Amino acid sequence: MNDFSLLIDGQLVAGDHTIPVLNPATGKVAASAPAASVQQLERAITAANRAFAGWRDTPFAERRAIVLKIIDIIAANQGELSRLLTLEQGKPLAAAAGEVSATIDYFRYFTTLSLAPEVRQDNETRYVEVRRDPLGVVAAIIPWNFPLLLAAFKLPAALLAGNTVVLKPAPTTPLATLHLGRLIAGAVPAGVVNIVSGGDELGPVLTSHPGIRKVSFTGSTETGKKVMASAATHLARVTLELGGNDPAILLDKVDLEHTATAIFASAFGNSGQVCRAIKRVYVPRPIYEPFCAALAERARAAVVGDGLTDGVQFGPVQNAAQFERLKELHADAQQRGTVMPGGGPVKGPGYFFRPTIVKDIASDSRLVVEEQFGPILPVIAYDELEEAVEMANNSQYGLAASVWSTDSQAAFAVADRIVAGTVWINKHTDRMPDLPIAGARQSGMGVELGEEGLHEFTQIKIVNLSKAA
Ligand code: NAD
Image (tube, rainbow, N blue to C red; front, side, top):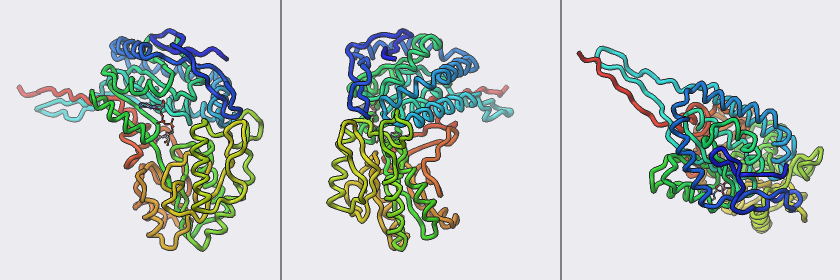
């Protein structure tokens, strides 16, 4: 599959120019993707506005039938979509297939919800309904770590609620999304779903456009702030799912081997490029050395390579800029901590970085304070639990966190004191479509997933009837 097009107003169209999409496992061009001009993006916004009137008035059951059709199309093309995800994103093929399966599950979840009006009062004086109207055109902006799954957090909910969509994939991972656009072009009314790829510069055009009524954005905190400022010019609604620096706190009673395996998996899955990955670990001093050793042993055993090769557990880092940033954090960690043997960047081709454990690292070092978003993990010793909770909370972020202990009461007590949108106990990164996610502090604004996530794509309208004589 080498033919990628924009989807604008139901038509598959070439971009203004093309941009090369690199395979991060080889550093070579995997395919050329269309890059839209500003005029093409504006055409997509106009088409989505035109399509809105018809889509808003389409009965919910019919909208649901079209979303179910999209699900069937994804399921029938799982192999090709998975291969494209591996080629552009780098994740192992099995993980890519897992992402496509999860995409289907998330789409399907939203089809089980309803938006029927809720009767809030029905008495002698009044009858009051709470209705949920669509907003208009939604801009869905996606990062490069889970191109299809993160679109599934937005697209089905926006469509079921009666909105039309302009979806923008990340510049380095547009292929699977564009292929999906090609597959669904004939199944969705013209203009209801538009897919427009290109450079970062399309983002501000989209978010500042008065034809956009809501921006549903997933990406970095830095960009999220720009999105919010830009949407403020016309008060478009925003949902922001942003960066994180999730802490994991081990309490003194843990099953060390089991916990090391689980924490390793939650820190290094998708090569650490997960918003809710474990990004810092706090460990009681008496078990600190054996725990670091157990993590380092797992890091040394990790099979890193091209995601298309059988048996590979961890693919490359997705892009050159992120690879360079990780190398910087690694160099800094070598100065400010002890990098355990076996980790670090691998000489090219490709952006390979072996899972890396860093111990005895200063708590104000870059690797601890910043979001690494890659396979390098700081592990920090603590003496008093109070100190661990304080260090865990000492962050601009508040996406998620986890507490690990065989004493669940003690773990709940710590969970109470963590500032985060999700706190897991004895696990991390356990997500399900019916559980709302909402970043605390600078990790986000608003909610995705769950009924709450569906409601974010709606405008409350109260219809209030007088029953007085
Ligand atoms: P990014 O913020 O650089 O880019 C995200 C998207 O925004 C891309 O499509 C990009 O083209 C677009 N964009 C860039 N500049 C823009 C602008 N000024 N206005 C509008 N859009 C613009 O993020 P990234 O590097 O692609 O992704 C990594 C980040 O995403 C990490 O911080 C990660 O934690 C975060 N993330 C968060 C979640 C979550 O649910 N909280 C999920 C996945 C990733």
